[in-house]
Length: 119
Image 1 (cartoon, helix red, strand yellow):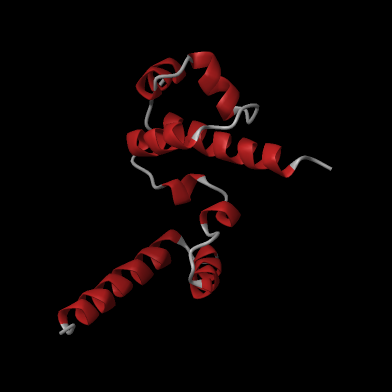
Image 2 (cartoon, one colour):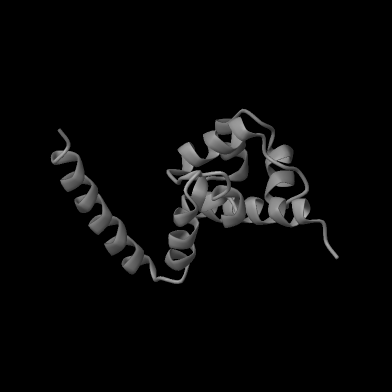
């Protein structure tokens, strides 16, 4: 049985690599952007090393993605204080991207309406 930390590190690394390649960053250029060596980035992308939180946030910023898009769902949903959000997130996972976008657009309208009625 594989170590769950290693599996999660591989998943995060694979997502970082895919997002980097989508944006046509070379491994060397992206590593420089993060302030790490190309070898260190390669090790992260292969799941052999875990990213430090600061590096993960920098990578997400550079790639224009949220950490929730990179972190495994189990990690990004922990300790929200709102168990209902986990149920909603589980349901969102089964939707197509355009359906998720519809959901978020609708929720933003609902929240704007609620904020506008605050006294």
